[in-house]
Image 1 (cartoon, rainbow, N blue to C red):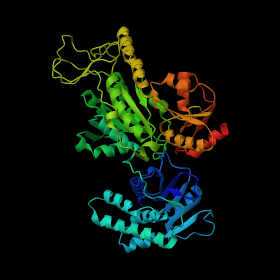
Image 2 (cartoon, rainbow, N blue to C red; image 1 turned 180 degrees about the horizontal axis):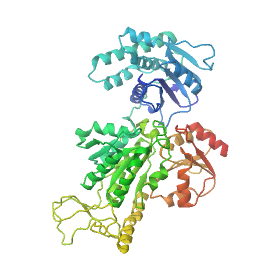
Image 3 (cartoon, rainbow, N blue to C red; image 1 turned 60 degrees about the vertical axis):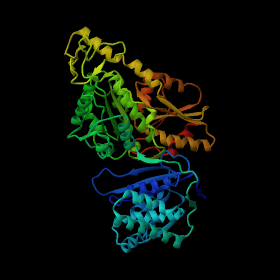
Image 4 (cartoon, one colour; image 1 turned 90 degrees about the vertical axis):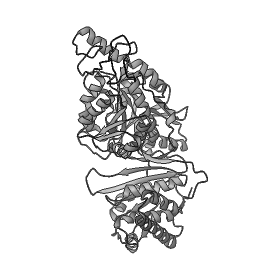
Length: 586
């Protein structure tokens, strides 16, 4: 990779246009082609919270090193309409290239930049010449982009052929569109752009996927056999992926009539012995909270992915936030143990999902996988996942035809660990009860004070062994300089922008590290407390308004952040924003 004049060691594309012009698809296809050439990629889509229409765009960052988030600016703008150029010209790097339809005309004063290069290409004319449909303008743009950076157009043709396998006419038309867009740029502009993206010598196998897809794959590998959900952005991708794999995986996948129904179905399936899961966003999880409490009371292992978006109420359905942390930690009526884990990238989505199923069954508690729109709808390249890293552990579960013990089976037996032996419905010789009312060991309702206290304390005895096990799973992870003057602290999707910020800060001579809190409930008090000791400045990073992780840290460790960087406009951090906050603190 060679980019003359560009400050970063990556190059960023921005594809923009109207909804329906194939914005996300074209950006994703370009990313996959670049990945096949050996590059690492990160793609983020942006679309409004409306049913049809509006402006959409897709940011794609590519480098010969691993990339973790979009860049602050775009180097090449692929504009499928005039509006895209006018909206995004302020987000372009110095020397950026703008590829747009030759039919577009700009009035005097509309273009505010004189430090960018314009590359008009006859998108519409080429599509008409090949007998294609208007949406194929995006394919012409991909061919033009490939020529601009001297990238092998054959790789783009390959990924399009894979995407439209069996539809030969569409494949042929798109291949022709790529060729004509590529040739037009080469003939008319030559080497007019200073970046070259050739094949890398080392091209290790990689996959490109969203966080939703990684969670779904993690569930499959963990042995999930029942999934029920009601569609809700941004979590619907899990339902879509699993529905397409139901026969292959022998998983029962149900689109329920409501979030209430979905959660209760998951509890029922788990009660019958299946590893079970649902996914939703904030409003849907509100509807699930009573049933979530039922899972806590009946000690039924369930896994819930909560994909956050800005609220309150409907909020902004297609944007991102981290404002449901305290809701997840404290949700539902009464007190009972639960686990809340917040992965920070697609790799984390896969492995933490596998861990979630183990913890749910071993400790018979509900587990929340706390994500957000940025992490679960963005695409990232990664090494193929290793399912063998997390062995399936089902805990104290007896799978047998008959209960042979002389002792009558107690579903909620008081034990030293707080975990009761669990057997499946239909086991001969055993009565298996579930009761949302407070109950005694057999599961029958009770209001006896001693039995009520005994059952509450039994449930909470799980906390210490839970903490001990999670402590061995690296609940807090540290990246960057071992002797920092600046420590960034965050959780979830702030990881990607923070890691990119560390690289930028390092190039400026700033010693910095990032502390990622992965498991937030039970809270890793000792691990976090130790990392917040010593000299240097500490800056809290969150995409919410009230510093919710900061509140949890203060509650559990007593540490109060003097410096915070909070963003709550529905967009993720840019690495440059984090660096700017560091400079203010220093």
